Image (cartoon, rainbow, N blue to C red; front, side, top):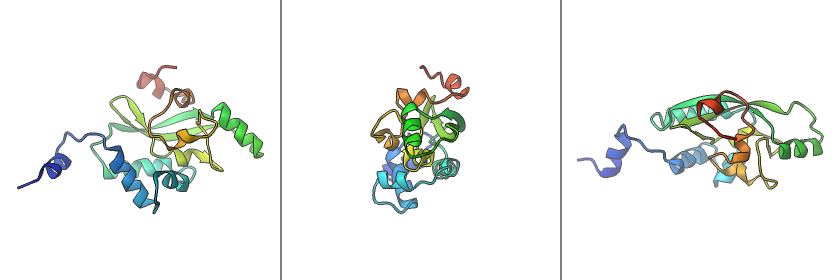
Length: 151
């Protein structure tokens, strides 16, 4: 006979389990903490990270999207301060569920440790899964309209 946990895992009514995904990624990146895991992610690996999550947790998300972004004003200033005057826009892959964006790969959206969509001077938002209002403002593509994201 199955126990309750096993039944829930096998059920098609899988709920979003952020902690299970974090644990999976922490082990995958051989990290001790979530912050260390994010810091170990390599720029541009967001596609790979999203695909790993979607493969490991196939019923947890509705889709994976490539969104176009402009770097936040804070990130642009921090990048300029270290001598980076390159393009301040790009793309980033995210997972969606019921009209919400979940980003487990913010470290892969960081240049020289600077999270390019940050809305915080201390860049602590780099370690969160959901976007703040300031982070949403960086998204410039139709994904905003699709998910009904407000300014």
